[in-house]
Image (cartoon, rainbow, N blue to C red; front, side, top):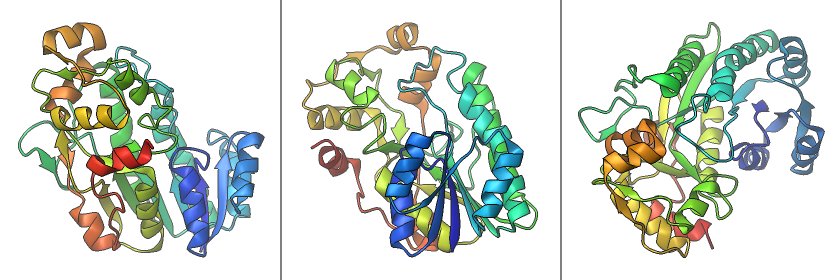
Length: 311
């Protein structure tokens, strides 16, 4: 199939391009810079240097690619997450609202039949069970910057799932680790762990679901090829509380054992958003993706995945 990938130079876009080509697809990767376009071409794909916020140029690029499937992997997060920043998610919010609308319009104009969009598996409402399925509700009452991020996320998912004439699939990825991520050897989260700046907050009861970027790319290839329209959690097999995974990450990174701090102190230092993650976050079940996409993660647990990715 002819596949158009928006966000081809990102952490998941890079392995996704290679895996789509290996699976026999004809791929066009979209990026905003000619330098990144060269990387896309070296991987064996065609490149389109386009800004998603230029709807006419985007439409031409998707039509020229003859796209049968459009994959939306666009985000614009900073190199380091600072939950105290009110504008932390602003650029990504625009990608998820205006950018998604433009991509869907371009996909329709090109006659694409399928649209696969990234989302996140760590936005479920913090109530009830600690591990969530796709049918359970997302957060809808968050304040400030995270509240605006959730509004953009819900708008994006609704637009994709409700698109006329297009099979819309939403992949709710877990926290990425592996090359090009915050959890890579040169990533900002691992840097914080090595400096003992990522403590376990309170009881560390927030449940995290991780996914290696290569596994996320494999699931995305599967979603390009098969699966009914709908939502799929793309995570590994072992959701786990912060109190369990942070020490394992520290050991894999060659760092000292993490500190523990009370919630009130962490709130003063890192902000309310970080505390919500540390104490209230819900994990996500990958059973639907494994069953309906015929996919399973090659890195089934962060317990071994962290060490393998940080070698």
